Length: 150
Image (cartoon, rainbow, N blue to C red; front, side, top):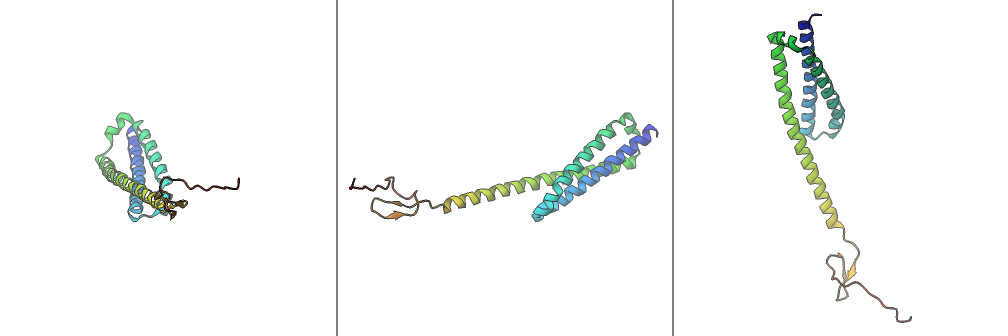
């Protein structure tokens, strides 16, 4: 196999790997928009595997060196096209992941705040002898009882 044919094969391999990664990103973006947690769990490993495969193909393509300059225009345009699609999907993916993480953080804060509000705590006596249901509402005086028989 001559250098130009090898370069064309390496570029084709990169196109295939990037196409697969773009497809995974498109599915993950859809799952993020639809809040499909099960699909997201399945796609996490697939996305990592696709990204590693793409990186490996790019490294192999770099080894073709100067022969890459001789690839035909059709192959070059296909690579540019899938590159643009993948870049757009990556930008969208980052935005959707950031939104999902922020939403999750806000939800957890709301749950924690609600749990704090629900935590009534032990009742304490006020100065007037009434039981205050929330320790934060009671006065600073601690309850005290004396056993005079001692």
